[in-house]
Image (tube, rainbow, N blue to C red; front, top):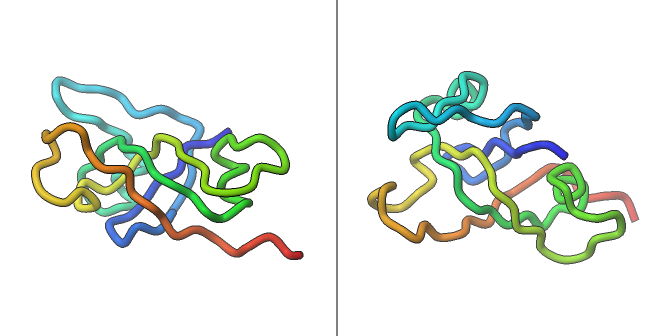
Amino acid sequence: MSIPIVGADRKIVGWTDRIPEIIGASLRHAEAEKLVGGRIVAIYIEIDNPLDAAKAGAPKEWRGTWRCLAICSERIVDGDTSRYPVSTVRVKGGEERPK
């Protein structure tokens, strides 16, 4: 299982097996920050793509939307990032599995 990294355009831009660090009130992950071009937040996402869902931990043969935590660009969140609860974001993933 890997953690998706999601850009401000709600697309998966990378994957990591390393969890982010909490430093004070900030979340830090050098690779994710580089991929998204700035600060990051951890929020729930919904993944429709079966291959991406499997990579993010969905059971084999899972059908439907998979919900998981992801490392995301801070710009993905509308409004104040300290506001709770933060909405779940639907993301765009890679290619669909061949039929």
